[in-house]
Image 1: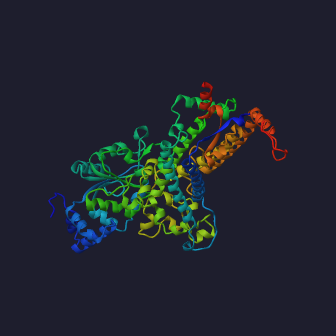
Image 2: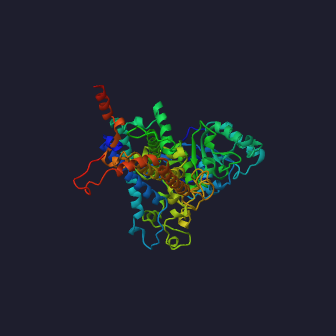
Image 3: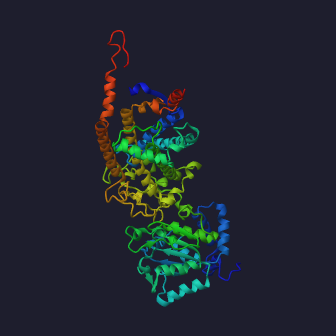
Length: 379
Length: 237
């Protein structure tokens, strides 16, 4: 039995009438979910027996709630399992029953009571323009709330592209100066879980990792869990063999589209997007965009809104306006260079005329030795 | 006449010439395959993926020549320290006053053609040297971005050394775009480079074109490194 003052996850499960068998089954699920071998089941079980339910504060700022929508559709582990049993979700604007003063009280109770122990979860970016007035909750700016809550957080998870890299509201010209959380907060471990939205199982998987091991998962250079973001959509795409074979869809209504060839030429962002869509897929593994015949738009990559258009492989070249690719700029510069070369060649024959004429005149003095009998001398 | 007063100078040693042509080949292959990777041919064929692999081959050739290009480039940097005076790294960075003077002179004589004073330099003139330095920076940029992109599809340690560029530039998309845009730098460079070689050979008659094959240039006696000394030594006697 735990020596913690709060009940552990196992104790909490018992109080809900969960049998030991069901608890162990859940532990095995979690282990599989984390991609660990069966030998790690005991470790996960031990962790859940000794870890108390972690208090979670879930904030919503500049966003569309699609991350929450995705999260509540998690199938393995099920969402009820996570929200009701594994964590103690003390504050979240969309799901909690309380509102107004009661909600704010719950927030402050957790922040003071579990200082340094609660998990902070952020959905949405934070506007910084004009003192942050573009996103206020309970009369306070998002920036203010984030800074206060982050000060006592054990770790922070940034859900979705909004919190990880700004998403659509940070697209040019970014009027509210929407800023991803990692650019505002330091001193707290931050896990970025980008995607618009992230895959449900990736979200729950990240939480499960924190629960099972009480530490943040291994992260890549952009702060994303390596378990889910180390491979490109392209690398795990079932259409990949068509790419290597050079079999491409050339328009959405051609024969190749029907045959299910690679969508690379239709602007698919699979080759530049790091996500688990090709493996985990969506809605309980039913499908993902490419399987449904549409290219990846790279929703988990930074600035994906500005890297348009979505249906062309090469983006607009910065500073040259719509429909201008690097190739168009290159061809124009190449033509300009060719014109410059031609002009220079003409100029050379005019400006260097005297030099060249002297040389030509000197060459004419040299007689053709074979034509002249008895050879000749070079003057 | 001037022709009679020319003396041969061995300018480009074998390693420089070897580097030059291997580099030229690599650049052509990399540009062609790179362009194909960016914009694959539209082939309408009803086949199974298992029967074809042409795009995979194009990519393989691109990656293979990337390695050749990179190590050839490294070798050239080494030769900038080990090679003769015309290959030395000092020709490429205008850090001396007389290099800047020559830059102005070359612009006046060869670019704007306001002046017909001959340029004395036997190897790279100061503008050419500085342009090649810029080209080396572009080589470096293409190597870093290229291997940075390749790192995600390779288990080898070598490309992994360049993986840091991806988060620095904000993701694969940006890296890929700039890698693609820089291809045009090489195409423009090649156009101008080839023209200028012809221009110099035509105007100066020093054998600029053949020098990258034979290594020799034909230099007027008054600028010739040994003949001018002999001449002055002879005058002294």
